[in-house]
Length: 541
Ligand SMILES: Cc1ncc(C[n+]2csc(CCOP(=O)(O)OP(=O)(O)O)c2C)c(N)n1
Ligand SMILES: [Mg+2]
Image (cartoon, rainbow, N blue to C red; front, side, top):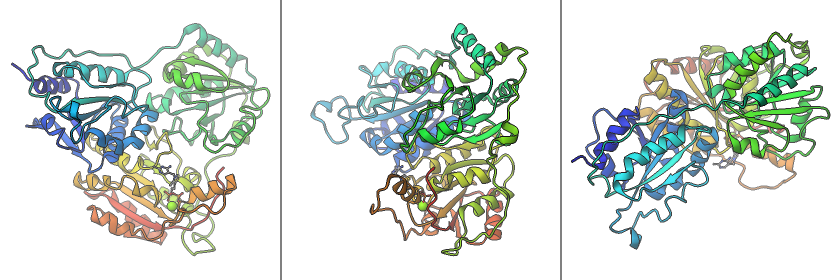
């Protein structure tokens, strides 16, 4: 007779889920016992790192990823679980539970409310009522995670269940991952766009997730409309060197509305309406602008404060709209001549800031951009320098920019690990760089160990301003002087990185930075560069 463990591993094998990202505890050892040779276990020594490594691995492989955490210690990963949910990443999060024999007494490590713990950041949370239901629960979990909008799911698995008999083999099922739009509604949208005098397109991360760069370009060119990236887009939806590209929209109500002035129809595809951060009141849209919205997430279409929505897959809709446009002549857009171009002039001015004599972040980013191969993958969590980074580093190839959809720090360092592992597994081996603030660097620091153990050649650049700079910018905007806890002196980034097994150096000279960066990608370990930068406080918007 087969055991629940035998049947479950066979199912995972058939589903191609043979990598388990985890941090093990006593309640998981019965599941991991006699770990099969054809499976791989990727250990990260803290739960937050595990989730984000798996999230990015899933995104980079365009497959679900399997995670195994330790009962209620899942709480350590809540920030990155919330990010995975907002990233719409299909994650199968499993955790061990105390044995059923003792659960009633709540011994150590009991997950008292297992299906409540991960909420609201999972699509489904479940603890099977019978051990033999575990394989089918896995199958349901995978189906739920993959169907739109994709996202994390959670299974709590009592530790005594794995040796129990399981009579029947697991049933393997498949589900679809794209929702086609209502044809008549799509035709309506196409008609409105055709009739527009000056349409504008706002593209979101779902286009990148759906491998839709070519369709996004073809549609924008057919319509002849300028393209903005949705505010704080976690993936780049459009080539940033394309003549129709206008930049990233600001993440506040009034400034965003201002950028759309002069247009009569705006179409948002594959993003929320809109992802805001600071509250800068004003009209959602400029006068005379009609907003159309396409997303495959009913929660996203429901919560939009304005505009008319259509449920559907971003890329299917782009293809459908392009067809419906037929031979409509491209609008004579003024985008090419008049819209501000995001790319800053190259290398001009002094590299050192006037006050503290340190390099400016902008000069560091431009220097790095000079030496990087065109297909380099950039993973970003550098809050106060984001505008400088986007200006210095145009994304011109698909799947070469990743960040979080949530603003919850601690995702990007482990994410760079997951992406680099996926690059190596797939044989694509594109270089990976993460640029991460000295504050952000601290949240999932343990992922450095995983990167070093896996011998991943990640370049990790830490612009060190010794502060939570963006919060100082926020304090200016919100008029909240005197907030404590915004300075973070005394982190020795180099020693920390070396302690986890990485190469590391503190550099304050652009030529030395370029040389060290260029060498990093041919090593068999991660390289961390600590770069003291000027502590300027830029405006938040
Ligand atoms: C997990 C988490 N904790 C706290 C915050 C609040 N927060 C937002 S930005 C920030 C500081 C970021 O500092 P750093 O990475 O050094 O970037 P800088 O602003 O200096 O460029 C903090 C603490 C957050 N977003 N996420
Ligand atoms: Mg900082």
